[in-house]
Figure 1: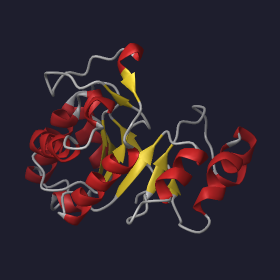
Figure 2: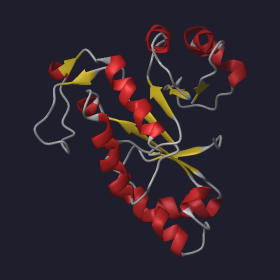
Figure 3: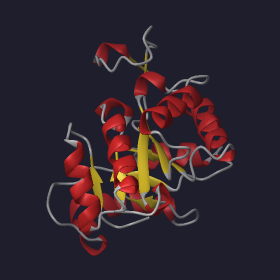
Length: 201
């Protein structure tokens, strides 16, 4: 996994992604809720056509399962939708965006959000489908985002494929592993990864 990633958490022009690829970026982070998957896919396709990269395989693409789709029976369809939007056959990393679910919306494309709609996640059922996504080759690796140490320990108690990564938000300043402890990240997240290594991103 490349160390530096460009996050498309806010809508950005395709040209921004193309310039990032030209500048050497190889890891791109998106999510269903960002609604930037199609823009990223168009930019990657253009980068290949322009010869900025030989193929999509030179890039590392991460996307995330939105809480409205974090239900058994909806994980695989959500990933397939993401791949169609990005015009790709696989992701490098697919993450559960948050350790909660939301009541199912009638429209699978709906990204509306209300705290009143949040419900407990069937973590085991959702993770089993994440594992199936990897077994089918639709993603090379699976992981989580915004999971506490306790949530990770629960997941590891039944996972047959361990999460490859836990993406967590830290203050928007330069940060290195050796000073994670000053933000409480090392003590909260690192102990869960000692027996089954999980990258912190």
